[in-house]
Structure formats: C-alpha cells, structure tokens
Image 1 (tube, rainbow, N blue to C red):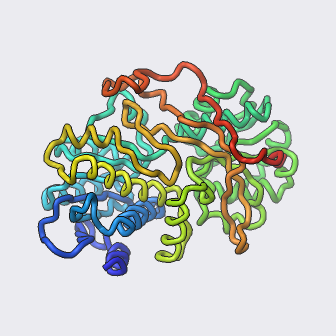
Image 2: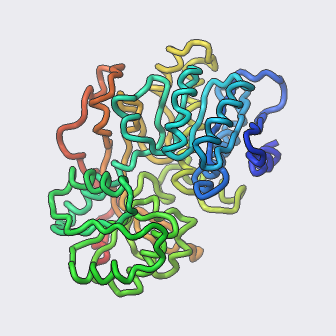
Length: 426
C-alpha cells in the first residue's frame, strides 16, 4: 500500500483543477481525518512543493498511515505556481471534500489569494512556506499554524554569525525585490556593522563580472548572499572562480544551498558557509530515519522542505493523540495544536503566541560526505529559541508562559555543545 501511495503521489496534479484523493489506508470509505494539501507541484516552484508533500507522505508511512489510530484521507491539488489556479483548485477541493486540516506549500502571492476563502471554511491551515509578514502579526489567525521558519530567522542568525566573527563591514547581494531589503533590515537587528553596499543583479543573471569587480573594489570583510535558484548557483561559481572565496568570507541563506543544488556548484561550492534551521547531520534519531527511508524511497536527498513536510505529519499525529483522534471540537483541537509535543527533525520546537515556531538556527558548511556526495554539515549552532518580532502585533494571547510581545533584545546565541569548530574559511 505504501508503494502504491508513493506512485499515486507522483501522478497527482496532472489535470488542472482536479483534486487527487489519496486514501492512505484501506477500510472505511469515510475516514475520520481528512487532510487537504495545496502545493506547487509543477513550474519553477515545484521542488519545494513536491518535497513538502513527499516529506508529509513519509511521516504518514512511518505512522502506519494513521493519526492516533484513526484513518486518514489525503487530497492533493496543484496550484501550478499561479494565484488564479490556486483559487480554482482550492475552491474545488473545499466543495468536494470536508477537510479537517489544510497544508499549504505555495508562493506568497498564491497564499494571499487563497487565505480568506480557506479561513472562511474554518479548517485549520498548516503553512509550510514563508508568507507576508502581516500574517505573522496584525493578520495572524487562530486557524493558521506556521511550521516554516520565517526568512527573518535566517537573516538574524546570519547577523549573529557576523557579530561572533567580528565582521565590521559586509556586502549583501540579492534579487532586485523587496525580500533583499527585508533581509538587510533583519540582519541589522543582530549585527551593528556597516553594510557597505547592497548589490541587486538583473533578474535571471548568469554572469557576474561587474558584481565581482565591485566586490574587489569594496573589499568587505564578508559577503552575504540571499540569491537562490539558478542565480544563486551561478554567483557561487563565479565568486569562487574569481578567487574571492579564499579572501572574503561568503555566507549564504540556507535556501540557496539545498542539497539537490550543490552538485551544480561542483567543487567551487565546497567550504561555503550558510545558515539554515535544519541540517542532514542533526543528531536526532528521527532525522536519521527520515534521511535513510526518504532517499531509499524517492532516490533524491532530503531538503529543509522535506523536513518541514515530515514535521507536519508528526505534528498532526501529536495533535490527534491529544484529542483522542477527535476533530469535532475546534477549540480543543486548537489547544492541542498550540501545545503539541512531538519530535521535530529540526530540533526543539514550540509555537509562540502568533503560531510561528520558536526554532534553532545553525551555521552549515558545504562538504562531501563519506560517499563523495555534496552535502551540508553543521559548523556551529547560532541561535536557540528564536522568536518572531511580528508577534507583538498579533492580537492572540493564549498562554501565560509565552512572551506577550516581541523580544526587546537580540536573539541569544546558542551555546555550542559540539567541539569548537575550525575557523571558517576567509
């Protein structure tokens, strides 16, 4: 049955607007729990969406296809990276299925398009991709839980690293988009040095001669790249090929250094540092099991998107255990979601009052593993119990133990429990 489920997942979303129902157990035709998944499974954003779905499926397989011994039905729809399509397929899914939980792994524009219709259905939303910041603050909702680590956490952790390394002057390079400016603002919260320049290459750039020349001229202590996709790969190769990697430390946001992308960087990407909320070498038994079973089943490496999808499955299992498998009482379900205790493959996990996770961030380095494959390994922990500052604007107040507002001090660097790391490459 597990193999059949995996094959079915690979075929999902082939017809526009058609929901693919995935019964994960045999038996009753009216299972207790129905999970809808809205994800980007085709087009430029397909890797993240497919990884999230397959990570969730792996968790279900590990749980025997049930949550709290209750049968589960999974319905997956593909938004094809289009907000209009997201509206169409989500509407059809809601018309045909009485869903209890909805997992979303779509772009910010698609999420903005479907948020209100989904909330109107009073189904709990478990979000696996970054959303506009107001969703964490003034527009937070008691029906939405975020399992994804917001980009701000990555950038603030990068600032902690630059502070620890006594970097006084850096350059930021990123896409010509608001996300780059937001990255700089987050970086400055935890690092007080000078941003000598913010370089924004043209969209789709594959050569970086002008940018490399400017970096030589500026001579910063470090360069922080928030470029992703093909642009990010091309920049890392150009940076190393120009000989800058040995002279000026390059630090990247983890999204640009997911394991499937590393072979395209080839040897030029080795030893480059990046910041992420997950790493394949985290010493967590469930993380090791995920990596072994996922790579055997799908023939590709686990990514942070897979890890988030897997956590979603473990999270729902914990929620249903707490409610004895019942979904009929929304308040009881919400309370169980807020206080769910489960083993996250990303490390200690709990929700802040705005339903954004308090997580840990790690400094990783690109290396080869024992089999010669490119991978990431933890260089040092950076932040423990990161908190999202937008929670000050969120009107929800549901626990006395949680901080009612945004932290006023910089995130506390995590104590390093591993052997002291070697000095990072300069």
